[in-house]
Length: 128
Image 1 (cartoon, one colour):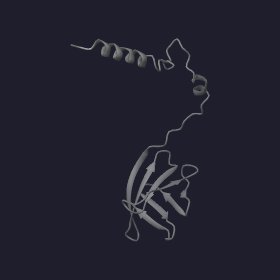
Image 2 (tube, one colour; image 1 turned 135 degrees about the vertical axis):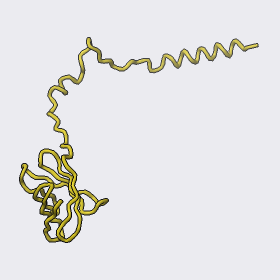
Image 3 (cartoon, helix red, strand yellow; image 1 turned 90 degrees about the vertical axis):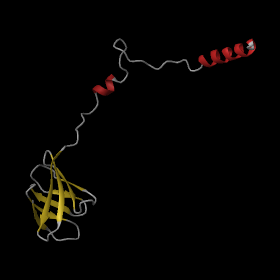
Image 4 (cartoon, one colour; image 1 turned 60 degrees about the vertical axis):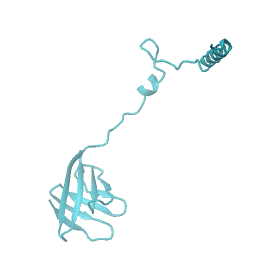
């Protein structure tokens, strides 16, 4: 036989817990105005980062290799002096101007021929 008082106590406990936290979250529907509409309308436009246009490996005059990623817009490149080494982002103020980064990094040229300066080393010319 089942104990009716135990079943009744369980039912009372479930009903009391069901009443807790019965607030419903604010729902945005087509009839309710979006609470962030004015903030989104006044937000500054977002510029996406450029995509990689070309990734090249270049051999330099001292027989070393550099790895360069050229980005669309010709305003930035990513330079690595070792295949698995850290990458340095170099930026140009305008397309066609030299790419530079803090510390003395400088790169000029195209994906076929570049002149690169790395801190602590003399400038060198590299070809694809």
